[in-house]
Image (cartoon, rainbow over all chains, first blue to last red):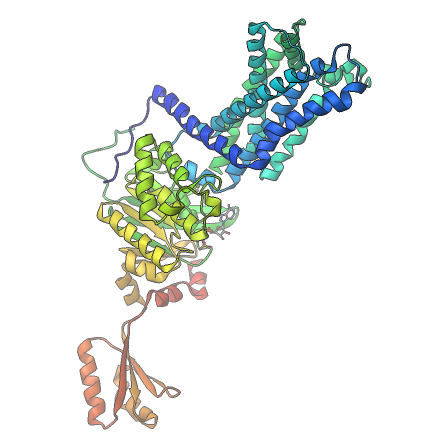
Length: 265
Length: 322
Ligand SMILES: Nc1ncnc2c1ncn2[C@@H]1O[C@H](COP(=O)(O)OP(=O)(O)OP(=O)(O)O)[C@@H](O)[C@H]1O
Ligand SMILES: [Mg+2]
């Protein structure tokens, strides 16, 4: 009772199976997250702790012109996305360095689904923690604008940012020779928001750091989020969009190339 | 590219010609030729590091190789890897189960990635969990499984699609005797259904019992290949060992039978000689009886695959293979 081999799929068929296989692997990643205490900790507890810490511990000492909680919430969201992305790099690298990859590769599945599955799971996990942070922030005094369109745009911005750094982390995960190596990436994504307008305005930074803080890609994203959530101007939206799409335009094909090269060796 | 011919099925399920593979300047495979007929079990033997895993991974599209060709069910492994993946199941040497998923989730996931659909994947998973005695543990995360349980789950995963060709790299390493029997039964049942199985093993008894044909890999080449009986015949024939009632008779007995090339073992008081035909045994015993050299025990030993293994993988053989 051996099964006949499936006929070569059409482009449409391939797209369908990419989606279907991604869904299966997304479910796998989400199950992993639920069953790993440290992953839960990173995606849920850590962003909330960060929020409470910045608002109650540092907030009193930081003067940014508005209520500090209003200023800092977008920064917390961006930092949380960084944690999620570094987790993705580690999980993906674990798949590549364990027997899992051999099992997947011997299956007639869409191999791109391995990448998209991780990214989708990361996006979902992260949107959840975004909502948690926003809910908690509102409960402790965050007073955002109430325009529903602005909210949708804000969530869209976050999602785009998450996608961009997730794909960076997938590219890193493909290069890393070990999960530990991939976790080195954590440093990079966790560090960037601190040298941006996430926690303090760049004009309070030393002159040497200021140009970097003002022009690195996290800053326009934060400023856009801030504008959308607080109803202030959103002049940086085009820059934020260009950065995120630009990063995706580089990292998606680069990840695909690196992955193919890695799994061919 | 010519359309795959549905009318004339390829003569063999797995065909390997002149396959070579080096890691740096370490030439692991130096020209492997193998033919595995459809619906048979083929066992690859060989010392550690002989290249068994490398060869299996190459055939399963996981390991690029340097030269030669390999076909699985007529599909070229190098140029049609996707088609080959649709035809094979693989259990690697190292378990590739997902530690954080339950046994059942592991199998259902593999089934869905094989595009069986949710319902069929569930049904097949339940079937295989039952077959491999894992039903009781089906809902537990596999990190709580013992080594043998993981191994069995990994085997089940490679059988989810009922593929026409199955590669098993040391499938029974670490299995207890009962699980090993289960595995053998599963392999026999698959082969009865027309599946082709290529397996590697360090258990020569396993190859002997299970395989239609056996190849011994050594020095990067197929050192010898054939049925178990053929291989054994290569290293020698049956021998008969006679225990004499009086060890002092040993020299006399050896002289009497010198035409048959006997070997005397004074420590045991035994004489052993090759047995060409069973009838020879009668003549032998008669001759000894006539000469009043009584015999107390007769033991017939056949060469085993162990003898084959030692004979063809001796270090001296390696030198000539270079
Ligand atoms: N990725 C690799 N890089 C370098 N050398 C390798 C690699 N994989 C295998 N080798 C070498 O190739 C040779 C064959 O290895 P392989 O795993 O195929 O042996 P094997 O016959 O399966 O051995 P065993 O019985 O121990 O499983 C070994 O000498 C091994 O060191
Ligand atoms: Mg091996």
